[in-house]
Length: 515
Image (cartoon, rainbow, N blue to C red; front, side, top):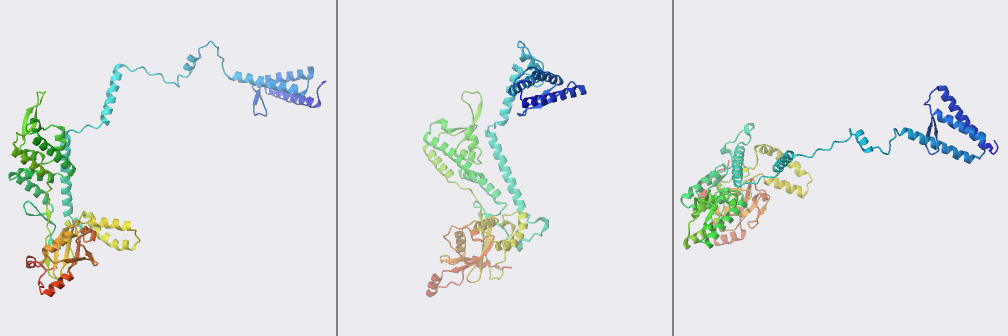
């Protein structure tokens, strides 16, 4: 024990007692796997088996009985001993060892066969062809099919049929106002029997549902008299898409210009019917082929250069100078053509003075509403008072006014004259105020005299303003007040030339009474 301090001796005794207790416990239990865990301040733990404890015990006894050194040397020795035990345990837990000469790649691959996917074999020629065909089909599905001239014709016919079916359904729907839920009023109960139009070609009076069919028939009948004029009417009237009409007119005008500039060149007097531009921009326009035939083009089957097949051509014979001048005039007629539209019949009527002048019963033709919307009209009117009581912005009010104006196609207006008689006429809701002034002026005995019209609420209507009737809230019906210009009337009275009647005699002859 020489050379040890009391502190060192105490540490040896404490460690010896601990090891003896562990060794005895292990032997008592008879468990060769019982371990002792010794943890350092670095949170690392070393597990000791009974064999290790015995080895450590004998080493401590050996050091204590044979070696004399200080406490620091003993601590270093013990630390190295525990590190050696830790390395042995880690080595044992690492599993079976491997030789440096072994091929580790094959063994690792063998142990991981379940986690790895076998590499694919290279595709053969048939597989490549099948994949290429499938890719081509997918690209063809996503690639839009180019539209041919036949497709354009079919689409045009389809659109026209759909438009006609929609128009027919709308007209049938407008005639059925309330269905079986409300009684249908007789025509005599209305302020006007309906909305009528005048055909500009025949002068016949037509109902709203008859006008388009009648105008088409009238245009086709004019081919016997003037085929150029009829074909021009057909082009501008039968086709609704104005951009397409303009494009076809430009191409046909180019045909005429080329012929007039090169009258002897045969290529300018031949139009290949299967030509893409002709099929997609000219042939799809109703009346275009009729116009070319009216110019003198004739359908002829000719062989195609460099091919054995034949195709249809529109061929024009060589024209002299006079015929070329006429072609130029027909081109201007084509360019300046306008659609033929039926004119609204004003149905001018005169009534005797009546207290019922502000009472209007309008037929369904006046409304741009469906039957269901007409059913809700009364509810909307009852909500008007509540909406007016609300605090609304200017934008909200303007939006409501625009919505209200779109409800009506026509306006039935009455004008109370100075003699008490009432003049009535039918107008389009978007007609300008100047149209109303012109109608009243044409109905007066002295139409040259200046006058003024006042809307409800003492709102003066100015003839020179570009304002529609519905913007003055005159649709669908309103009563206006007529007044002569005061200065002119004073001059007439001073000259002693006062007229006894205001309206023309033909209107006074059919004077009626409002009920």
